[in-house]
Image 1 (cartoon, rainbow, N blue to C red):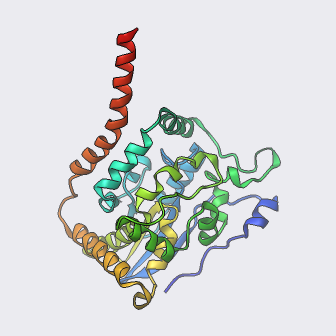
Image 2: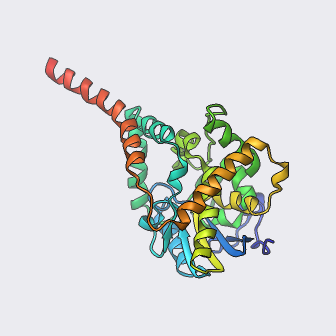
Image 3: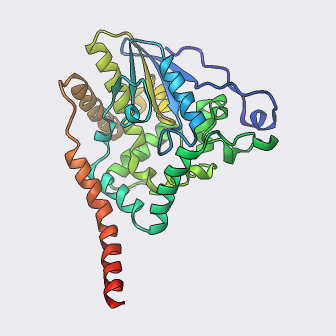
Length: 305
């Protein structure tokens, strides 16, 4: 059973309004397998947020998060202070997708520059742009508390993502070798890198993994209330996953979800975290192919000169 949602405003009202925007992150509260979960969706960008103001907002939410344990998705413990348990959701990214992500990111110098410049910009930007100079625009919302004034469902639509079940089906199709390989386009240009790698991120199945892992880990430690910090989209996925009718789901999708669940439960009970070696090697292999071509071309041009 879901707790009452925070107070949200429609996007048209947010853009047209002049009222001060609450500086907070919202949380969806769900009850799943006997554990109360407060799920926070975070616009983590490449370095924890597109500006320092937003990153501080996340860390404040972590500091004040309710429950016995505070969980975060992969790398959140490095991005934010206060994460107690980091979930190894990278295990739900197949090695071929890890390879593809890095291959695509390194395929052209422009893409590498886009990512590197984005990371530098995020670390150097002090505050978000939303409402600056008196203008409220969607293209400025990707690193602002204003994003959390909208409902999670509306945020999904603005960011270009399908509703949870349709997105889960698409993830399963992609994992089986089919599906649409075009990523969603977020209106904020700070997020233009996302469309490039989204098809390989396996977001819905990682949502399954993280919800199951966090709840099982809490049960192992005797916890009954936890907070979970995940990237935006995972949060509304988890709300849907906590209460969907499994009998109405395509059997192939249900089987894939069940497999992810059991892997998550097994890892939550394991005494140590899984090795990242194969994942890292696949990622390095993906990046090394275009980089070696650039290096070879540069060496050839230098030798000719």
